[in-house]
Length: 235
Image 1 (tube, rainbow, N blue to C red):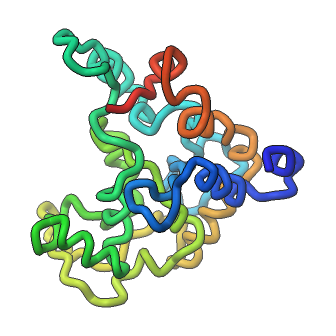
Image 2: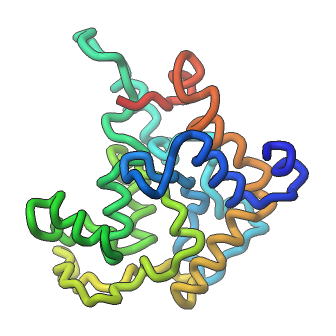
């Protein structure tokens, strides 16, 4: 399949799904759910220009240092003076069960699983997945949030809609009610978001750089000296 991918006989989406499967990731296990990259950094323009490299995230860096400003802290955190645990850059992971439920909170059975995880109620609104631009902003501002994406972001518009009318509360600052997921300005609808996001995944830029992210998640930068150097060591 690597050969097919290189020859562009299969799409970036398909290749990532195959890698996830080979790595033992599956829709049947929330703690080993398929993982996909954040690929864009522009969620505010009126239109999304896929010919402009500046709209894309740097796929050679872990999401925790997508904002260069975090790199220094992440390096400093790595030094564990106590020597009691293996040293790590990030205390949380780019993919975990809580993260999957976070993104899929509007869709059953994930809604019920989320409520069970939160001891019988929805998590506070500000911590919920309420907006795609805000989720990216959190990656920029909060070095602790290192969640990558799930495949649904590239094919499943329904998860962005509060179809069941769940009461997800209100945001603290704006007092705005949390309902459907807020989309980037360039998306005219949920379907349009998925379509453009998928197009971005299959774009020339991503095709040329996707292998850099694959090295971090599935390849030689997962552990050892290469992982340390790439600021890619997880607890």
